[in-house]
Length: 70
Image 1 (cartoon, rainbow, N blue to C red):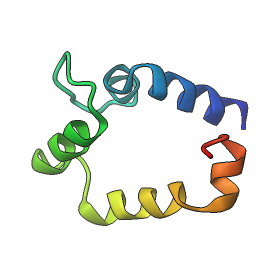
Image 2: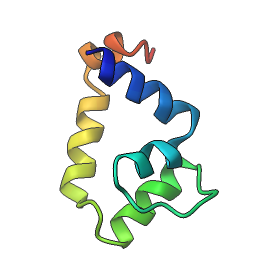
Image 3: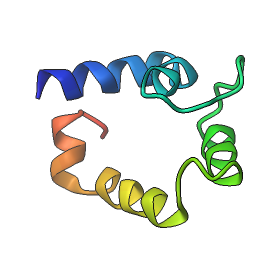
Image 4: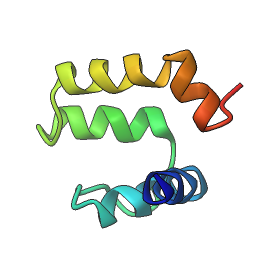
């Protein structure tokens, strides 16, 4: 659980760097989350189904509570 929290914190500080560490190819300087998601979709690095799944998880009240998202 600590690893997940640490990854989340790194992602919030620098989304592009965190994704590159996770082996995604994100252009340097791209830090807008919406632009990054669109780039990952356009380049086939993630599927729309996967993005939808992650967004559902993000909207889960239990997940929001764990990550203090509200």
